[in-house]
Image 1 (cartoon, rainbow, N blue to C red):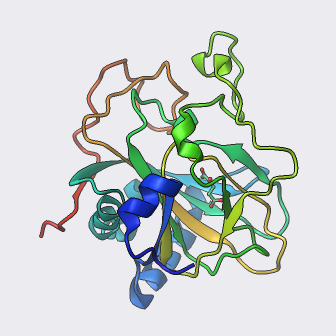
Image 2 (cartoon, rainbow, N blue to C red; image 1 turned 90 degrees about the vertical axis):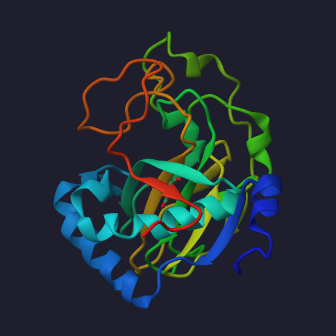
Image 3 (cartoon, protein in one colour; image 1 turned 30 degrees about the vertical axis):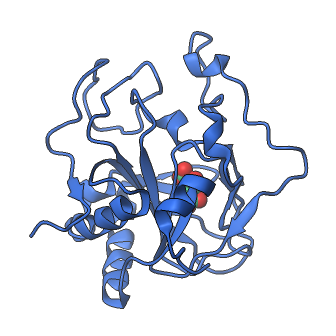
Amino acid sequence: MPAAPDPVTAFARDGVTPLGRVLDDAQLEVARAAFADAQVHGVTGGYARIVHDAWRRAPALAALIPQLGAAACAAIGEPALVLFHDHLLDKPPGGDDMAWHQDFSYLPLDRAGGVTLWVALDDIDVANGCLYYVLGSHVHGERRAAWGLGDPDDPRAALPPIDVPAGEPGVPIAATAGTALAHHTLLWHRSPRNDSARPRRSWALSFVVPDARWSPRHAPHPRSAVAPRHDGQDLEPDLPRVTATIQR
Ligand SMILES: O=C(O)CCC(=O)C(=O)O
């Protein structure tokens, strides 16, 4: 899908905006090579093989963050954001569908401000499991987490469910390699399994507003490698800070 002429308006209305190319050909090759090298850190689930905190493991990916962050800022009209976490997703042919969900359900933060920048590292379309959205659903606020609710006291369990009407597939948004989609952390989205023989690699980066604070009670920790945090704690100083204008 082509980039929206006015991404900020499209983001506010639909909760998602296609950004066009965010990595040029050379950067795409660098990202793919780093993706391959980082697989030793991955965990394999039914849905995908996932590498958490890829930027910490791959300097070549970390080097791309200022420019990706500038694209994220421009997409949502924020002057500055913080990369809270990122992950690489490898969905080989077959596997499970990823159900409707909101990314905020899985962020241990006190507010939903920010954006997921989802970067396609392959051409990703309906056949190999592109993202499907309920456009505009970000305005409905936080809903019940789609999975991972073990504790009956989990505050996310009391929320109303994501009630996509039965049979409603959502709007598929295909993305060619090196392009990105910016979606709101409350937008309802899903991605079906890869039904093709083609690779399907993506890099999802959670950029959050700089005044967000830790709220471990809100959601389980998305990362495996950091010590427990407490409510109200500042975002760690070593997380990448990005701005709409790239600082050199
Ligand atoms: O399928 C993908 O690449 C991204 C899936 C997704 O929605 C997520 O990681 O939250």
